Image (cartoon, rainbow, N blue to C red; front, side):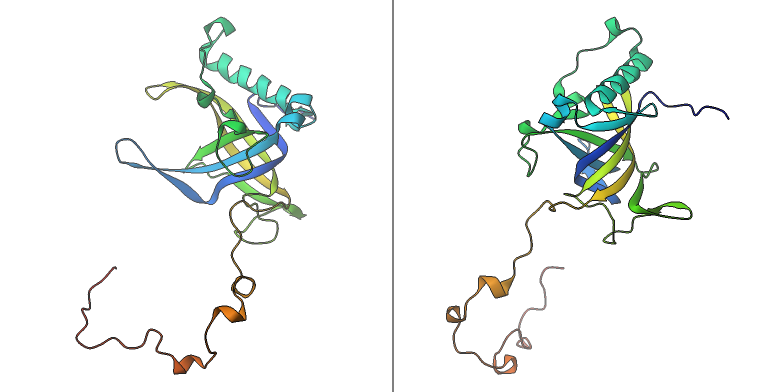
Length: 229
């Protein structure tokens, strides 16, 4: 049996927290020239203590190892492919590298974490699967369905690291290839407010039937029919 060939720039991150997911509908950004750019996107949060101590794990070259080691190796492979010998590698600012310091961001849940920023071109939609299998393999995730990844849950995330050197500058990026729901977590963003919890009986006047009140009835015939559309 032929041994499977592994991509030295591919990393599967294990049990990272999902954030800013655009995996069902593309993320739309306005460029400096006013044009629109659509991409698939995901951030994966990794606890700093776990990352630095080597307990945050990843699958790399067919083996399980610390995520820090795997990402360093994949980054080195991408730089070597683009720029050759290490002496030729450019010095890059932190915002030009795909793994970043969450303490520098003012975003919910990022404190105390590093995060991997990954995206993919519109034509390269990443695979998104649940943590359940059928006869064909991992079951694809449906938006809002059971086992569908959402921002705040924990996922396994496959990326391919690549180095960029063009008119847009020099960077080391991560292409988003696949996501798998692992387990639930508190969703990012404010939860909806329950009016039955917020409002008390003594906050309102006399209770009556809805039809007794003139709420949004027919407009006066002489009222302007214009407005927001």
